Image 1 (tube, rainbow, N blue to C red):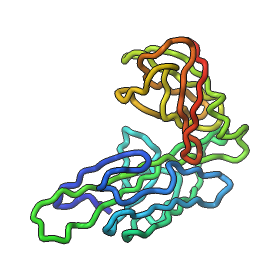
Image 2: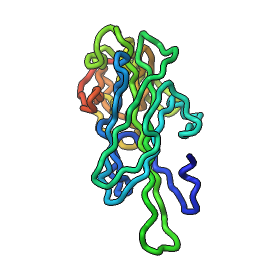
Image 3: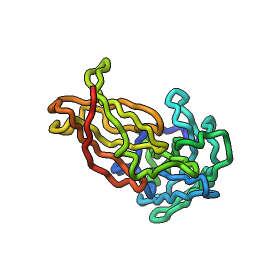
Length: 243
């Protein structure tokens, strides 16, 4: 289904979470999907808040940025239905996600991505040329095996931090020994103001490490962070770091 092969110009806008752009009519309920391994399926609701119908194409990929996966090429151990739907204005549509099996780690969460691509209808007026936006929303899917030690809510408190230097300057490296992925919205040295020029957010992977660029602030051995829980709520805190 090559929905983007059109005679009009389609501009792809990619974002994580919800859109404030007037071009985006479809919004998802929630900013992430938690898939407990004990469940047969999970559902995600999308709503059309626009004033016109939207054709929506949905798929799941493994997040490999180099693969540049599309609905036709994406690979993931999930079945998603319906892959294509029409959502009327003011109405909603439920997406069903089912794990199809596979050799995934059982000692930690695995991460995949849900993609929702909306294509607005052609203008009703007899317009010879127009710009059409195809907007894609991407949110993480956390596949959560049964029997993991601990809980996701307390994982952020167990992350350790280290101040490092990379090619762009200072960075804060997180080390996550828990089996739960920790979503980070922001991290900076204590006392440093938020800096929009610094890349925001990322994932401190389960049983893994990641670095977050930082800039300025008082190097006094403390940092402040803003994490995101299973429900999309922010968790503000601070922690010590080493060098």
